[in-house]
Length: 368
Image (tube, rainbow, N blue to C red; front, top):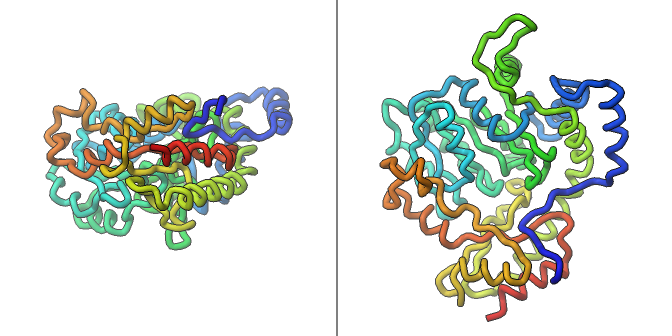
C-alpha cells in the first residue's frame, strides 16, 4: 500500500452537509456559551445514548477534571495504570493522589478483586476506565463503592454507545465522562461530555464549566472555561446522523479481522464479547511469546509498510516520571498491566478502511 494506513481516522460526513449549520451559526452570531446547536446536541445525545442528562465540554480531559470537582473528590482515588495519561492527570490537576491497582487479564479493565486491598482512610473514589470500550465489572465495582462509601467516576472515553443488560453503560457510577476527540467513534473534532444522573448535578457541572457563574454578577465556584463551541456542537449533530452507519462498518471490520487472524500462531484477539458490550472503537491484538516477532518488532514491520498501528497503552501511566515514585506504581504491584503493555498492539479500524487494506495488514502479520 502506498498510502499510509493509520490506526484510526475520523469519520467525515460530506462537507456540503455542514454548510447549512455554518450559515446558521453566522446568522445567529452566537459562537459559544450554550447556543442553539449546543442545546440541540445535548438533547440528541441523551436520546441516542439512553441517558437522562449530558453536559458538553470542550474536551474529555477538562470534563474529567470537572467531574472530580463536581463530586468534591479529595485525598486518594483508586485507578488503573492501563489508560491514556489524561485519566490520572485529571487527578493531579485536582491535587488528588492516584492509587494504582492492577487490571483483569481478560478485559484489561480495573480488577475488582484488587480494589479493596488498596483502600485507605484517605480513599474517596474509584476511577475505572472502560478500556477499548469493553465494560468494566460495574456491579462488582459498585458493590465495593457502596460498602466503603466511595464515589465512582467512569472514564468512558472509549465507550460511546456501549450497552450492558440493554442499558447504557454510561448510566453506571456517579458520573461517566466521554471524549469526542477526532480519533473516537463519535467526534466533534475536539470535545467531551459528562453524563449526569439528575438535573441538580448537571446544573452544578454547567456552572463549573463556565467559571462558576450563576448569572452576570454571581460566581459561586472556582470553575473553568470548559464550554463546547457552536462549531463543534454543529459538527456533532451532523456526525450523529451517521453514527449507526459508522458502527455497522466498524463491526464488519472487527468480524473480518477475527476471522483472518484466528489461526495465526502467537496472535490473540482481545474482546469479542458481543454487540451489547462493544462499539468496535479499537482492535487490540496480543503478540504472544510464540509469535516470530516481539510486539515492537511487529509494530516496526507494519510501520515500514506504511501501516501505523499503536501500542495502546505503552508505557503504563505508572511508568511516567510524575507517577513512578508512588508506592502503588511499583511494577511488582502491577504484574498483569506490565505484561500486557509489552504485548498489546491496536490495528487500524475505522469506517473507511477497505477490505483490501485489511487483507494487506493481515498478510503482513502472517508473513514470517
